[in-house]
Image 1 (tube, rainbow, N blue to C red):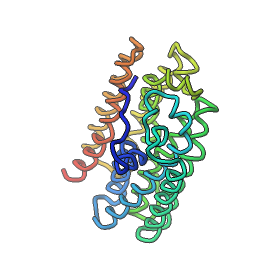
Image 2: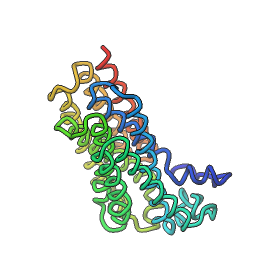
Image 3: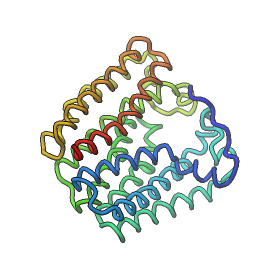
Image 4: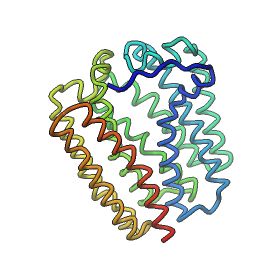
Length: 293
């Protein structure tokens, strides 16, 4: 179980928490990945900064709307009972308005100052995350795969911001992100399965406590990530530095799941989670170094 977070100490801190800054940081990293790779470097820093601001606003808004929709469930789970809405720091109506305003302002900025495609991908991500993935948590264990779709769109947004279109290399980034998320979120679900069971979230570790299907899903996605991660090299958007580095990175990611398969403990799930979090900045550094060298 994750350490129980204490309530926000101020209204500002509460609104920042409402925007899910941890998820936002991953969204921004993958947006930069798409922008850098699609533009073969950074041609316009101004466009990149505007793209990141618009994406951050939309992502933060989606996070706030997720808080709003899950406020009743959050009040029942130990790890989320001190979030701003269940803790009584922010009212549900204010959280709803805050989320809607952020999503609309972020999308408007992207359409106005970047391009229509980037703005469309932004609001599509928010729609899928808030209105498709969030309710699916109580319907099917496939919610993880469904949620991985909006989670994989930000690099497409970065690519579209740099180029104005999407090609196969952009979709290669999408599939890398889609596969990367499954072990990441299965590790979280493993550590939080008692909480999830309390609110009837249909996470795979909840509906099959022995963990066998969860382990199979983790290794299936990690194994597939290895060949998919070399697609940018095969289609000419990355070079040998990227190829060699991403193979090492993906194999290490897979190896980090072995202790979970053997021991099936929260500590081994935490190891996999940490490995997944390190994968993304590692991927960004590889792409940058590949372009520089």
